[in-house]
Image (tube, rainbow, N blue to C red; front, top):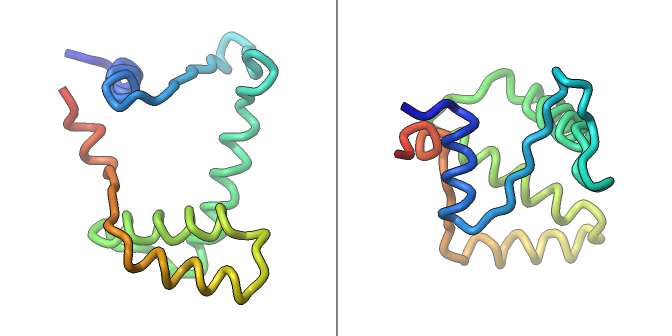
Length: 107
């Protein structure tokens, strides 16, 4: 049986993603000067603050909210008109997403 970290590493390898594990318990916070645990903490805080406005999200719709947040993160520096155009064009594209359950059930 794989541990949670092992599943993430295997999943990343199959999907061609780079996975860098940082072990804060061993006082490791930075790896190669670009992988920093504070980046993860910062993103988590922004996501949590953004999600609080909805007063809870049903698990059924979680992926939609995460895609919405990701879109906002990627386009936050665009002017309003361009942001709106990007959102409308993005709606027309075929989505390719992976859920938390996909990762948990990955063997």
